[in-house]
Image 1 (cartoon, protein in one colour):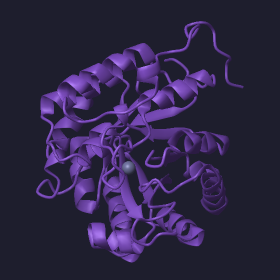
Image 2 (cartoon, protein in one colour):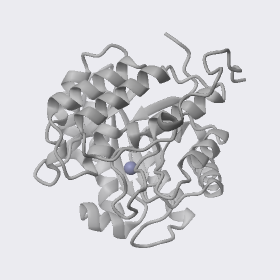
Image 3 (tube, protein in one colour):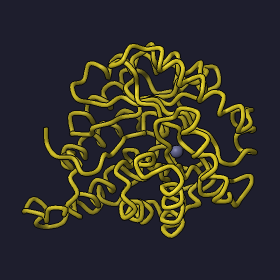
Length: 314
Ligand code: ZN
């Protein structure tokens, strides 16, 4: 297998699709996932095991996990809002499960009607479910700290809240925590400070991924800052699908095409073929024709001499 320096984790089928009203059919999702995997994307979050009555966009997540399990070499991630969702994800065979826990307790109460203490209980329950599986069949279990850089309800989220939560989540049985800029409030300095603080608190091996949005245009600057702090997994969505309900015209997650371009231009290997990835974008646009999608690279094209040798990362 080709060397991969940075893992680009595609979250469009989950974060992108859950942010739009339209329900995309199963075949379109399957074609999207298969095409991105064929372009070399190593990890895809295919959906969320949330109550489908609340989020009909995610009703076919179990079928998608089963389908994606047939794709050689692909890591299949799924979001689980609670232990019940984790049970479904385990039954479906997801390789990686992630529970979002909001650093802002107000946000947590509003979104999932649970306090921090109740969320920690869910994490403990999920740990027990994972451990009950035979070794070799256990998914990697991560807790994503949502609103880790600020909240649309509480505003400023103190750093102490984030580090304390990280500590509690690891103690409750999450293998790793992630930091999520759910609201697009982060800036590069904040990214550095918060990653450093969490690394000091739980260890650098227990925070290796961040989830960034481009709401205020700082997505790639934040990604670059995260790389300097040793982060090795970055979430993004193809075409920045999903937009942002609070900021019309702003993309949702950072754009996979632009992120892969930045990384490869810096000599960091992603295992992803950019020309091939651009074709997947065409497929996505054809499959979901009336949703706006974003990205600079697709408009500007690859720079002259792109196919020539680029510097190898140290
Ligand atoms: Zn997100």
